[in-house]
Amino acid sequence: MTPAWYAEWRHDAVHSLMEKNAILDRDLRMNQWPRWHYEMDRRELKFSDDTGVRLLAEIQIVGSTAAHDWLWSWANNYWTDELTVDARLTRDFGMANDIQELTSASVSDESLNDLGWELTAVAAKVTKAVGAYRPQSETGGLFLLIRSIAEVKLA
Image 1: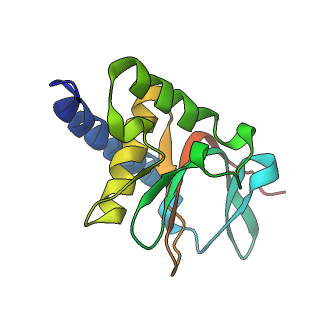
Image 2 (image 1 turned 120 degrees about the horizontal axis):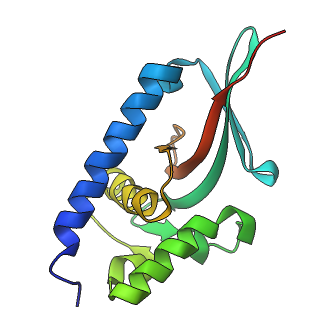
């Protein structure tokens, strides 16, 4: 049984993440760079243009959406432990507070993109992430937490 306080707490987490991402977009133009590239082995997300890498972010994988559900990264054997630290901390929070959607390996919803953002917002609040990013994909969504992000000074 999910605690009564959780729905409002989750709602606040969504608005908090929206504010954090708006600040990243305003101050660093995060969503305005024409290209992104991640290097999972380095836990890095890079935003670039024709002149090179412009932003460098340290990331964690929260989870992904596919055909019919959300899958937490901690439940996906493809990802290393180093990439799923924050998702596991979110699961621990869910276990401590008896929140099933945070402790179930997968969760279903009619709008998987919305669900992905909502669960990513919860993870961001639990782990105090500075933002989140969802790379565009035709086959599903990968949801990333941004632990830190900085401009890359061009030579």
